Length: 442
Picture 1: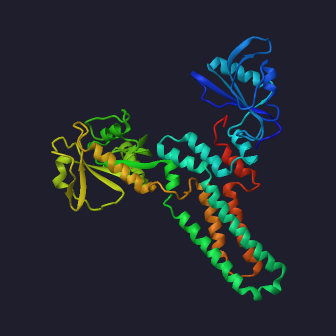
Picture 2: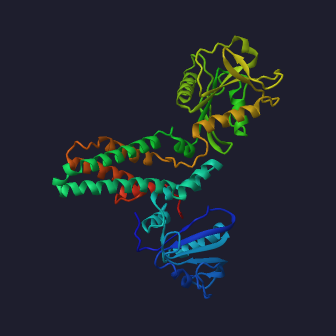
């Protein structure tokens, strides 16, 4: 947790050679930085001002831009100063050393934590900011922007407020029990309202983990017997040589991974050992890992040799598998070949046959898994899902035939779980867990 009496600072850009580096200062005494760096110019709020920065001995450190954001109209809700200086490692080090003489180095996520504590954002919006920073694909960024806009907060706040309204009515019956039987019709309305919320939350939870998958990436495994071209396809999709390609069977013995972007969707691609019987204990371990990874995958690309297409016997057909005829150098085109009622796509990395079609198939499967872009807010973290599931369990226990005190308690606990998602809580452990994963300076 943060001590809001302290003024904090941190480098908000990546440490390294760059044209510009941004250093943030936040807290009640942020303006002390002006005197410390001997800045004599008038600094107008929210105006970029070119200044020279000097150290204690009045030696010029650097010249750069300073912007002052007074409380409460800043990211953290406190006085904030941003220094935009040259992105030299030496300059950054000197400025940070100077700031450490008067301020405290920020911990990971402390700027965002202060923004939350000062009511600038709710917890889901703060997590959206972290997701946006980590986003590597267009669809990940799009989902994060939606979350930052507050769509989850509005949904959960609405449900929570409905529960609080219902609970207030129940509390009135506790205070005036003689009115319970006179208000049976009102209790029926309350029951209908609770059941409506149960249905909404169930539908929200029954989302095939679309939001979480988009954050984490879709796991795709390339599988098949030895020497069917798995590593060649893996390298092609990864757009770099990661796996060793060899004519010798059993070359790939461990699971190799690459993070790729297909159609804006994040994909975690795995190359695995060829599936066969082996007496080699190391290869056997690789085969065991390949089978495990294939079982756990969201999607599989199973390879068979084009030249052996007439001998293929598909015993099990899986809708989460793309069936490929590899090394199809002699194929006339990339038209799918029907074998045993299953569509097989012929591909040749060497001649470029079927590769674009395969990428299109992967994109289509990813869209099916993630769900096409919708306006409906989606759960993006296991933390959200856990609290929503608990809220649902409390509401499912709700029964108007139960003692009125138990009814009220079920509603209170459900409202608490909804509040825990957006941050209407006083549990330090939850806040620390959320913000400790942020980068320093955010």
